[in-house]
Image (cartoon, helix red, strand yellow):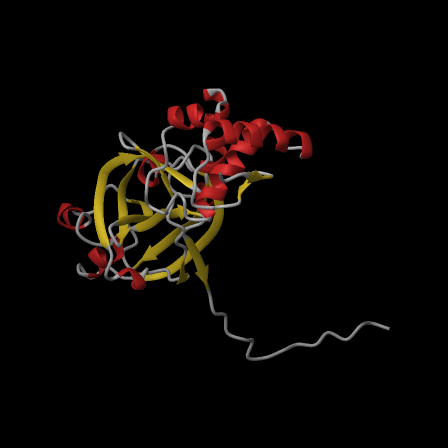
Length: 269
């Protein structure tokens, strides 16, 4: 029979019986400082790491794990919640809990997102509303109601980025129709409106609202965000927005030129 040693199976691909697991938990409790839910969490994580639970595939339901481990439903749910927050698991509405595919993409910090030329776009909504994000308001946007275009950007058929763009509600209707098929900047360029200057803020913020559903992540999951303000050749069109992704899916790189002149400050005597 496979036996546990401090929560790790001697035979990693064999799932133990309830009796074996409960006996192991009792031993582990006596020899470690882990609480019961931490021991359950560690065992599920071990199964993920050794391939017993494979990326992209569902794990047993909370009820099944409760029966198998011989613990309370609250203990199992707490352990799974921790693994959700750690980015090891993901919930799919109506289907269950899956092992999260660990995929992080390194991209250049490109204002125009030119590296996304082959990505698929899906328009979520076009609404009229005020900018309420406190960080985005650091760009001093207008207090008036603005046009808000929300999109999901997909890579390999999975949601990769969530983009919310705000611009003047006076933008021509013909341009607005193109927002559902292309990036806002591309749509403006086709109508002779070009970028003059761009300001960026990079920050991290907890997930909330729509992004939780889109990415299948828990409330408060850390998001990597790029907030922008774009001035255009049309004085009536200044664009504000935020594009974001879960912190473990996207990394950004940037190349900065060296100073053409270096000034050496001599200490005063």
